[in-house]
Image 1 (tube, rainbow, N blue to C red):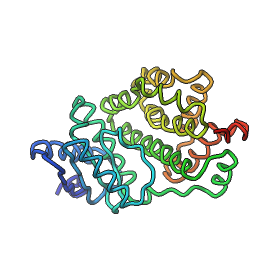
Image 2 (cartoon, one colour; image 1 turned 90 degrees about the horizontal axis):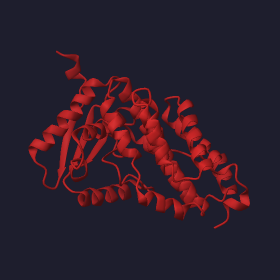
Image 3 (cartoon, rainbow, N blue to C red; image 1 turned 90 degrees about the vertical axis):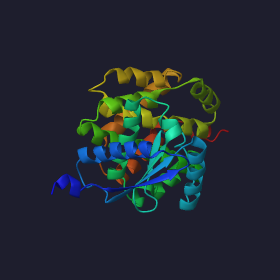
Length: 290
């Protein structure tokens, strides 16, 4: 018997709303082909949840976060998401959102969550402890626990996404990941408006800058294949003051350089580096100013 068939995960499809069999099977086949192409231990079982509308997906996501006790947010803009709160990998796909884009970008989003299910397929990859010393240091910067938790979420998403794209690039998934990277780097007037509101409030500023880490870190493994992504990354930050943009660029490079492959170690180290870089050089009186 072909070994590739033995090691294939069993993919259970769950549909929410009106989802045609043709669409469901097409996505399942794309997901299965990606599993066949990737090396390393594969999950035994995967749940593939397909939602016909954005409203239905959002309602479901809010309910699942509440049931899992998740207090952070930030995945509302993703084309597809992954979690493993129930002990098995779950790929969540909103068809209304996904199908609004090119097939290449759709594949990029599907392949990304497949990579996550291989690298981060258990509940332990969604629970991270912040060292007590870092909690105490954050307090000296005027950062409360709720803000620290949200920053941790943004950092963990960035680190895990970086690990996912590295895995995909190593196995030749280049074109679709470049397309996904370009999509993630897109910004609009809302981003500029958010920065203008956040820049004068230290906690809001920290959250805004932390949220930029995922798209900026994601492009790093792709730069040898698509050098123009570096300019796209700079454009993502062009609304920031020059010094702030340079600090973010240096931070992203350091995060890439310190990658070890150990998810918990990398997230903890990244959180410390992000806080130190974005807050540590500022006077305490400035941080505590409202």
